[in-house]
Length: 528
Ligand code: HEM
Picture 1 (cartoon, rainbow, N blue to C red):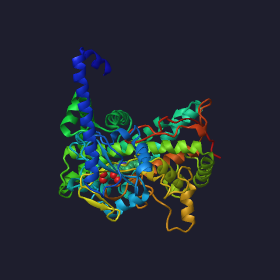
Picture 2: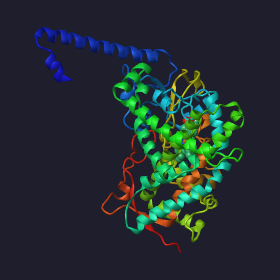
Picture 3: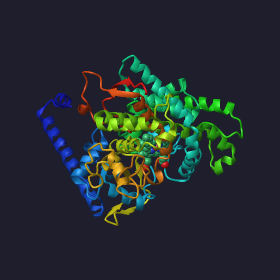
Picture 4: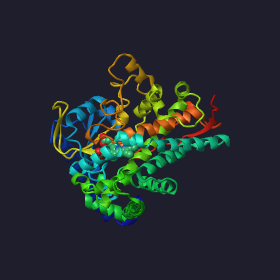
């Protein structure tokens, strides 16, 4: 930039002109900045606290590569009542950082905040927001979510997939055993991602192997295209589109959508071919095709694109999240040998010395400490630390009228910060699963749970937009963890970091695995 300026100014006269110009621009920017701050303060005295902002970008310059951490810092500095109002580019955004503020939002204003902000790139990737996750609040979302809850992710269907989980957990153990026998270290992320990917691919499309491998590639590419703040979050529609075109992003997104569509169309065509009407389907695609035949799913038109959008949603929502939670669980257990020993003892006690490699799912419900470990992992490492963004559809007077939030305000719930809220948790930075057992032992009605009614623990969200996949995710996660801890002892490779030195910072993205992928050496435990 400075070189350009030097070259272009050839005479004293032009230097003077330039200084005047620079001064004018700087003055205008200052004025705009002042007006902006003044305007946002003046427009309502009942807005939540907000740091000083800049013209155009608002507060974007205050957000680093890990937005949940930047927002937590801002909350510690400015947060009144656990709320902050930020201008993130073009989006006015309410950020919730404490359990008490989340409780008020979910108990009293869930409906007002039940939509999703429009994002042109996401709109394109979801067949025009025909999926569930990114669909704005309305009839389409209501019906699609009901289909997911009643027909795809119900307790009955989750139980029907138990053999798939068993088979994939056995495969996970077998792969790990091969590495153990070869005395090789494993990259946990790869092992775990293959497992969750295979489970979800079989549930959605009934296939594993090549299909799972192709899907894995598609998911990885998609993640790199949608991670972090997008042009659409910052700029109005037309300039955002122009930005995407100029940077080549638009073409990349179109190519990726084309690949996804070819893949989904192929597996749909296979399902249509083998469909046996009236036989009650096996995988999600079978169920969706069957529902289409039955009176249009109670008047809800399930077009080919609609079915593909829902199938893609399920695959994307289930794979990463579960693998990320599993990887953090292993990181925390390696860092906390006392907890590792205790949970391994419990698993050995409950699962016994059975010859077969798989743990029966009925045994998982008897592993209270394992469940407490899982909750503690979700408290400190929610895989989607800011959940999914929401948007308000009407004005809301929150915290008993203390603050007034205008309609069309985006909402970010910082589940990562809420899990560290000192008003809700004792010694929040400590990994201590016992906190969940003590609550139950102390006669409190029930220990804090993950199901969206305890607002200090929100890894699956809460309210109308809460994750419908929780019943399906928990057994997938618990089964893998129990199997890996039952059959193997785990060590860091020699010469690497010591447990206490493990990097506990996240990688950036919508879901946040450890920044440094965990590498461990498994040791096969011969069962007694
Ligand atoms: C550890 C695993 C998982 C975690 C941590 C997780 C977390 C979340 C979160 C935080 C949300 C947004 C909630 C909100 O906006 O308040 C969400 C939404 C959603 N999840 Fe999950 N999820 C997991 C697994 C799954 C699975 C296995 C499925 C399906 C097979 C699934 C399907 C969905 C769908 C469809 C939505 C959109 C709901 C809506 O917008 O109404 N998730 N999930």
